[in-house]
Length: 195
Image (tube, rainbow, N blue to C red):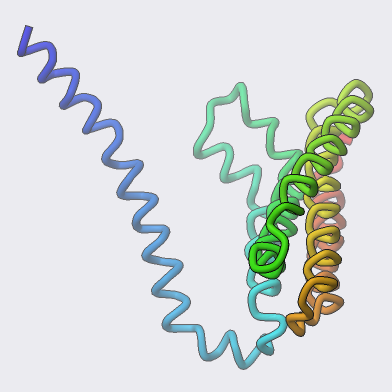
C-alpha cells in the first residue's frame, strides 16, 4: 500500500514539477527583462503609455503566435481555440485597465463594485445568448471582450466622478484599443482560414 502511495506521489511530483518550473522561469524572464530593458522601454514608451503599452505589446505577441503556442501546450482537439486569441487577449488588456482605475471606488464607495460587477455579468450573459448560436466560440470571445471593455469604461467613469486621480484615460484606452484593432487586423489578414 505504501509503495503505491509513494509511486503515485512521485509520479505527481514528476508531472507537476516541470510545469511549476516553466511558470517560474517565465516569471523570472519577465522580471529580469523588465529590470534590464526597463530604462529603454520607459524611454521608448513615455510613462502614460508604459503599462497599457506593455499590455498592448504582449497582446500583439500572443495573438501573432497564438496558433503555435496552442500547438505546443494543448492536444489536437483544442488547437482550433487559437481563433479566439485576439478577442480574449484584449479582453484581459481591458481587464487590466479596469484594475488600474478601480482604486477610487475602493476608497470612496465600495458598494458600487457589486453593481458594476453584476451589471457587466448580465451584459455578458445577454451577449453570450445572442452571439454564441450564430458564431460559436468566437461569439463567446467577442462577448467577453465587449463585457471587459464596458466594465473598464464604467469603472473609469465612476472612479473619475468619485475622485479625479489624474488618469490620462483617453491615452490609456486609445493605446489599448489601437493595439486591439491592430491585432485583429493582423490576425484576420494572416488567418482567414476559419472565417
